Length: 513
Image (cartoon, rainbow, N blue to C red; front, side, top):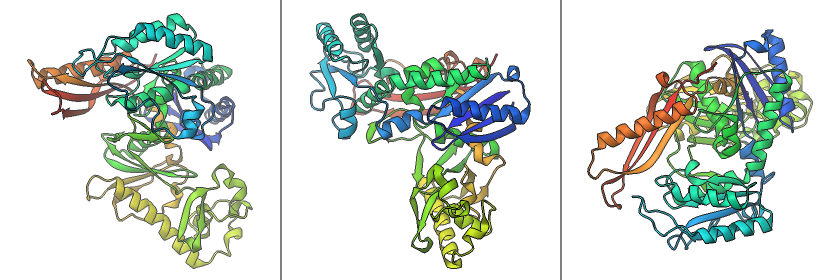
């Protein structure tokens, strides 16, 4: 038996799974300290089912904490951004294109030193070790607790980042370090951005993970727990403490994985409708399609694995204006139970429209009896048009695909959609995110530039597949269950030696027990 938990901005959802079967699921309001919200939802779930804590073998948690911290510019550390690449990378210093307020929050402590490699492993310049000792002195003087180290082409040759980490640790033993080759992909500025962002979350990640630990301890749950990451796979808690940035899009990813399992569809579009927004994404082989472009988080370009998700301002608490012709993007959010008309408030929301149309029975229906029929009809048309257009935008061809509706706001869609071959509203759709967390697997990835000179494409690909599979097994996957999910090859015509960028992703089932 496994428990999946999804900590959202409004609700914390939990689902108890026995193998592939959903035993029970429930929701509880998210709390400011996170832990007490998790304890409350777990108590509720265990009371509902009567299951003893000794029967639970693993707990999987998805959280939006770290994304929210960056978007809200709160609870972030100041960071020393150390770049190894002179004389080659002088033109654009670290944090060049960052929003001013976020760069100010992180302190703009940037250092540029000689170092870095070419794609084939040749050195751009020897590492400036004396300069690093000087940087360490400055870090101590400024009282910085966290640093990000980025070297040119470090995903290919990480040795300079590792040596720099060694020097900084010797000089400032208590420093938290983020090394870019462990976080981002090939693509220098985006990888550096992701590493700096990761470093700014070093303190928060320790607090959030320990609040998860304490919540489970309070309920005497001794089973191991895991945290879901951007690509729908799992990380151990100590890994999250080091790489919190890898959890950024775990919410929509969990919903999509849960939707795939509940609907029994591997190739489909998923619409996850929450209280404020709807996330629309495409499933390929049961996993979210990954974004091929740089992803913007809180105004900063990054390039780690992220699902390709389109968010639109339509949710259960979205405001309805102009006689139903304009919906959202603002929402009453978690205040829906006091501000929506059906709950005695004075704000017309999409939930009120659905109740007024007789499609759902929520709250006090008599409070929406005065809404004109034309407003109801127009608002319903607007909602369905918004969802249909979003699905169309995310499809890769004109062919209709199944559309799976999940999330607490899935009641907003009550008709067929022109872009869909069929509309599926599975059982337990409102807690698909918690179910997605509970069924998550373990992944491993390789993303490097290989030279094909003196070897063949087949040999290089076989090596990359074996390495990705080994990484998945090292992360906790059962080696017998590991499968290659995705292979991407991009020949780089502008580099010598028949250079090709190869990305391979492997996924396997978690070993429990």
